[in-house]
Image (cartoon, rainbow, N blue to C red; front, side):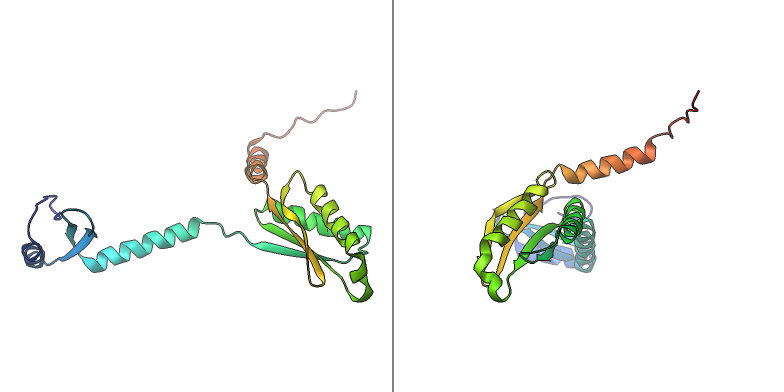
Length: 175
């Protein structure tokens, strides 16, 4: 294919010669096709456009991160709630959460408390996140990974848009 839109079937040396006469490069588009498909164009310009497309695609993608929260088997209620609220925020942002219970010293004898804590944590996040597998004990740590539920991410965006577009409620005065 040539810049003027014409399409011809010709031997490779003739196509290369014709492209050079026009001051262009011959680029193979589909080398496995029968006959191979080539296009006459400026190679430097083509590379520039490809790099620009990749950059735009990379800009639009969202990288999912794994956020880690550490607990101990005897974590206090306030600390637990504080970390649970962080996990809710992470899940609403679209990130995965890894909850880890660290056992130190003789605490390793009570791994059942750590697993119970992780299951309770996953149950508290049930509407926002889904647990990936059961709690696993690896060395002196037990962990579970919780990923966001797909429905929670668009719902957050919808509520924010609704708040921005909704007119303020009329003020009522007591009678």
